[in-house]
Length: 179
Image 1 (cartoon, rainbow, N blue to C red):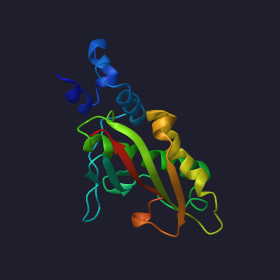
Image 2: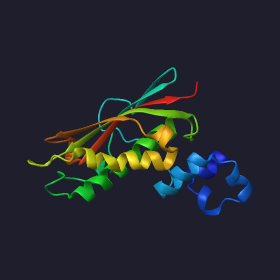
Image 3: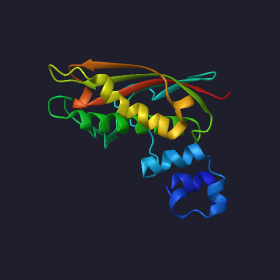
């Protein structure tokens, strides 16, 4: 079984022989360990593509962690969800975003040279003004996977009244990749 099939089956970190695991880039090992399961394809809920590449730039549509088309985290931060739950929603959205990148780049994150920009949308209850702290959850994931030099990006954290399907956090990003 080759490296790509091991990764697709979600077995690389659990049962791969040391020699096979050594062939998996460290960035992919860190990502797969955080994800804790086999990567899934993006689940668009409208008429759009999850990502569009132009040269070395990969533009990502907004991404929300979903299972069977429904958000994993629903509600407004500062209302139904606490700050800590909002940060978990941001972490989950960042992992979903990395799944999209992983799939777009043929089953690896190794070609990523920089997370250029990230925009986080946080469904916020009236009086909740800590969107930046919520988005720190997403930034932490990117730094865990890529390290600070590649994973720390420019960022916007925007509080909004409502999001599609009552999602708590959604992330869009622009990523630079190798040619």
